[in-house]
Figure 1 (cartoon, rainbow, N blue to C red):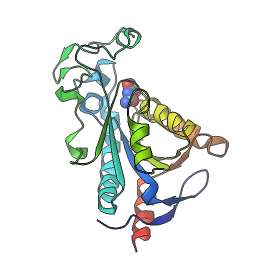
Figure 2: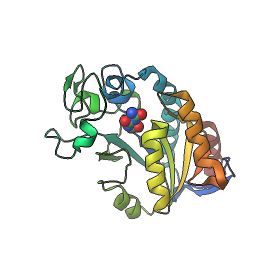
Figure 3: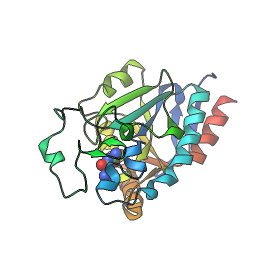
Length: 229
Ligand code: TIU
């Protein structure tokens, strides 16, 4: 493992200087329930193949983060088997083909410990990486994420995952209010609705970066490489 180093990352609305020792990679909800057929995403009526484009860029930054010794955080949206952490307002919402807690082809929908709740094989967490189980869309609500980041002296978050306008946005908004600089890696995020993805990224970087920065996996890899030289 190398020393993480420092560098300036190409981003919008402006480049941002990063001390990688104070920067975490946060991968949001790259779970089978969202990316594979038969899970929560599909029960809501979505075309889950829309999310696959994010897998390769996220895998590339995950590899680089591991090599550079960055703090890596994975999150998973899901609920306890007795649904005690699932508000009725969430469970009863809409008209999905299966509801949260119902049995599907990958086990009970969006329930911790079931196959569908797990992170996809290509991005599977390694021993020692932080895995945050969250009942909501944001990764700070009802989790230990804030304490973990404080414990590691983290100031900046490189955020990717799914979906752009739901769990990525909610988490970035929560993090921004808590004082973190959030850089969203656009090609490492995806939505069931490509137009929401595009607009979601624009919303983050508008108004001088109203709640963050937007960059991409290639720019991050280049900056990380330079930081290690
Ligand atoms: N439905 C949808 O777009 N997203 C979610 O329900 N959760 C996450 O974004 N992870």
